[in-house]
Length: 360
Image (tube, rainbow, N blue to C red; front, top):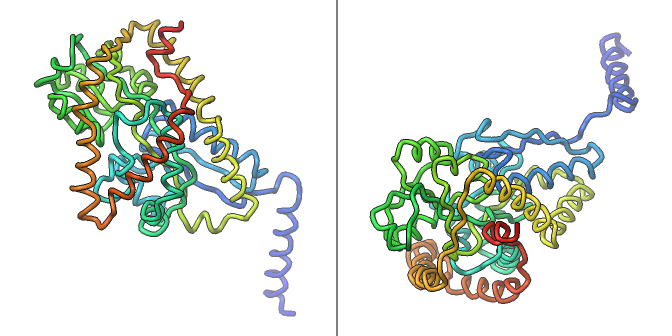
C-alpha cells in the first residue's frame, strides 16, 4: 500500500474510532428552527416544548439551534426558506403568505370555533381529510407538517375605551391576515403592520388599537403599556398556524425519529397543547392584571351583532375570491370543516383570558 493511501485509510479509521468514544459523540442531524417572533410569543411555548422534547427523546440524534425574532430570515421569508432547505424547521402563519397558500387560508376565519384547543384539532382533522390542503404543503411547498398550532385568543386592544363596536368606525386598527376583514366589516380602518412596529405606532398615535395580536404576545410585547383596554368581542380562537419541516430533511430522518415527531404531535393534540397554554395564559393574565390591563367583556347582543356581520360572509368571500380562482372546491372544504367543528368544538376546554381574569 502506498504511504499516501495508508495515511488516508488510517486517518479515516481513527476518526471513526474517536466518534465512538465518550466525549466524541456528535448529533446526526443538526437543524435550525427559524421563527419570525420572539421566544415569548404565543406559539413559541408550544414550539419550544416540541423541539426540546425531540432532542431529549432522540438521545442526541437530533440537535436544534433556535433563531428567534427573525434573526435568520425576515418576516415573510420563512416559507421560502423551509421549502428550499435554508431552514429545516419553521412556524408558518398563513396571513403572511396569502397568495401562496389558498387552501390553507380556507382555515382562516373568526366567529366559528370558541376554543383554541378545539381549533387545533379542527385543523388537524381537515388536513387529514381534504387532499388539496395536504398537497399544498407536501407538494407545492415541499414540507412535512409536524403539527398544527394557533395563536390562542386575540383581544381587541384599544388605547382609549369604547362603549360598543360602533365606536370602531374610522379608528385605525392594526390587523393581521383575515383579521383585516373583521375590522373592515366592523367599520374600522385596517392597517397591516408587522409585529415589531406596533408598539411604537401605538405610542405615536399612528394606531388607535390592535387586532390580530394574540393575548400572550400582546402582553409580552408590552402593548398594554400604551393600550390597556382589552376587549373580548366573542370572535373565538385566533389564527391557525403550523410548524413544518423541509420534506427532504424529514425523509432523511430515521423511522425511529420520525415516530418521535409523530408521537409528540399526538401528545399535543391529545391535551399537551391545552396544558401548556393553560399555564402560559394564567401567568400572563396575572401579569396583565398586575400591570393595569382592563378586561372588558362585550354584551352578548354586541357579540351576536359582530358574528352576524362577519359570518358567513367571510367564508363565502374565501370560496368565491380565493378558492374558485385557484381550482379549489371551497364548498367541499368547508363541508369538511363543518364536520370537524361539530366533532371537536364540544371538546374545547382552553379558557379565554377574560375567563381566567374573572376567576382570579
